[in-house]
Length: 192
Image (cartoon, rainbow, N blue to C red; front, side):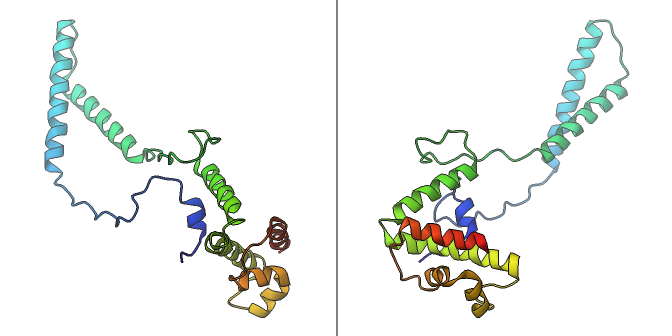
């Protein structure tokens, strides 16, 4: 049985290799070949620019040209270091009514709509997916508003939650809640 968490709710929208361990950190390569390549590129660019300028009858100090090309390369490197990572690709099975440019929050909402629709007919899905997240949200709400969790102060949590919500969260064996029951539980959670 998997524990549902907020990470499961919001983190499931991207292509991630299933069942694979995290890749081992890459070994650091020597910077010397890269620096030699950068220097060769600057020397080559300097030669091409000087040849072009001389063909046009313009004379520029060589040191100034090298300094300008080196500065340009440093600016390009600095920009690449602080560039944001590329946008992750969304899974292809988002749904027919979700645009291809949808963000991960929209994907998570659509996924939860689908899970909640399926939970009405599949009690195991409800117990595996809906109840753990509802319990986590309840504990977070109790912690933020009252400084307790269901585990830290069960008596007070039971008073604050009310009997229907407490029973639904405390006895996960209870299956097959109706839509109105889930609505009642969410209303009790919002009143916290």
